[in-house]
Length: 291
Image (tube, rainbow, N blue to C red; front, side, top):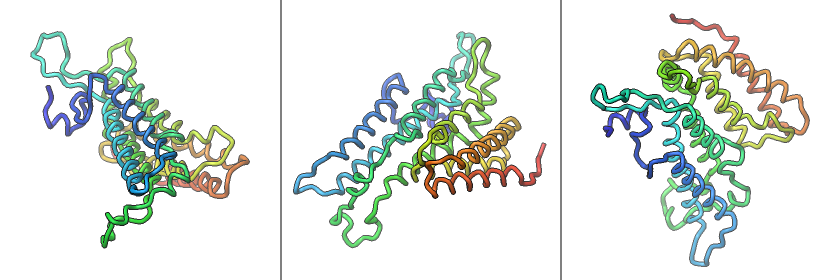
């Protein structure tokens, strides 16, 4: 049993809408499968003479929105706390942190299906097919001719970063550590930050170029990291601030080293250098610490 308030607060992963079945990980994985299959089908889809390319645009837009709903279900698992309304002495505690393995599985799904380099990939050929329905547009100027599908995917990734790098989630994960009894181990905040960095900056391990879509996502991650260093919020915890500064310094060093390698375009090299300088500037800024 749960209420609308439980759903609104987003702490209890069982108080959620738009999911089916008793295994949210399996459900979300299936929705990602459907979205990626829809992307692949549009690549080779042959339209009938009475069809228009607007149907391709609408189908892909639906796929991204459905993937976003699945991602929202998964994000509730990370740092989640189940709330039970049992009477006392039933043998069940009213507050139960989601097991670390379930949180890791949810984070892995988000990594592989949304944040990885090949997740919801958009080929140049598919982007050229995303023409509008000109009859639907009519005299309205609200339907653009160009449909920036890569930006739509980036908006989904941006929302995930906002949630997973928020002060509220960091505080809840730190609090959950005290709710886990040995020998069980909690999902620690540093593990979350390390996984996000590995997912978003996976190209640092390779030798090739960094595509534009990946550079946009990497800037989003670096901008949030710099903001957490420069302007920690009132809810920001000491451990969270220390971790973000440590990770920002380590990432800046990795970016400086990666900028020296071969095989990079001028844009990618400038991206790595500029991002490293931004992180260095944030770390060097004078802060007024409270408490």
